[in-house]
Image 1 (tube, one colour):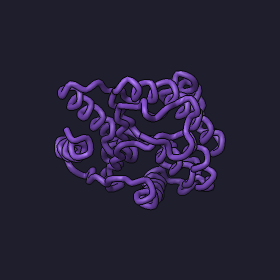
Image 2 (cartoon, one colour; image 1 turned 90 degrees about the vertical axis):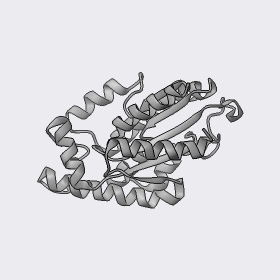
Image 3 (tube, one colour; image 1 turned 30 degrees about the vertical axis):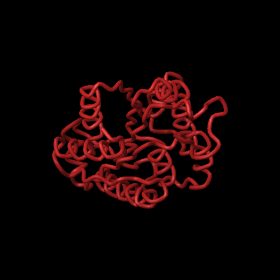
Image 4 (cartoon, rainbow, N blue to C red; image 1 turned 120 degrees about the vertical axis):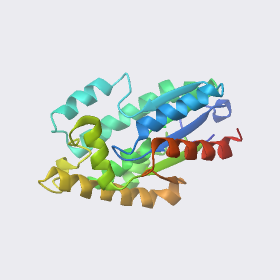
Length: 227
């Protein structure tokens, strides 16, 4: 396992014997369901698993959640909040778990953080300079590709409303939240397409049933990990 760049000075990558697997995808793509199914699958095979994701740092997650409720954070403030959240989890959860030989399943990673900021006008190289010096290169990254119309349906099934931030309402793409959601998700998808080759993603058809997607992910993971 390696860092994208120099990495954390106190971490010897030779000691990281676990695996880091990332599941990416937009809000409503079924990431949470796949995290649960893949975790159960790994544990059934006898592997210890640790789940991480956005806004789960014990350092700033509560403060970040509270700040987002007001819908008034500037793009730079939001970006630095998330970067702090990621760095804290990396040092205190991801690295220790990998040292212990665990499988770390990440519900999104630096790619979503960078894509969100780029949509909001962030400079790509500046963002790479924030995350790449400290981020580990995952053993696998799977992007759940789902049509925007299905994303709307799934979001309403789950919580009967669209999320303000996941709809891009803060950047005023459209006054209508449905229209804004579609346009915002399309912009995000285009950025992930640009990321695909650079960061070595595997695209997974997310328009299928959860069971079909899970079996597909298991097959791909088996090839990577030689299970």
